[in-house]
Length: 72
Image 1: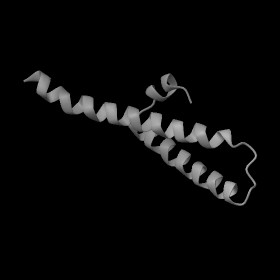
Image 2 (image 1 turned 60 degrees about the horizontal axis):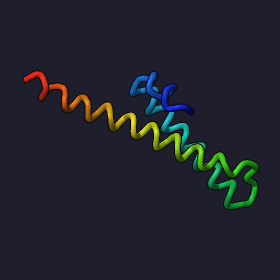
Image 3 (image 1 turned 90 degrees about the horizontal axis):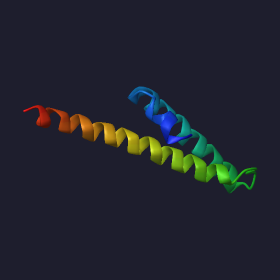
Image 4 (image 1 turned 135 degrees about the vertical axis):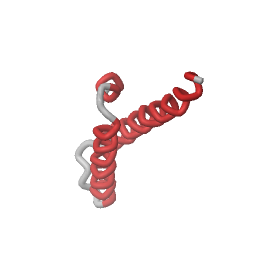
């Protein structure tokens, strides 16, 4: 997914997507172990999508932590 599309989602939606992507990644790793993987590039795509989601969630947490300090 593109970062622009991910930024438009809510935190709950991002967490749901992260869980879904992690499940997909697990399944693909299992297929890779038994040599039934059709698209090995998908592993890299999923890892990067998970990283993008975690980055966005971390940025939002960081921004929320800073907001009360700035208002004082």
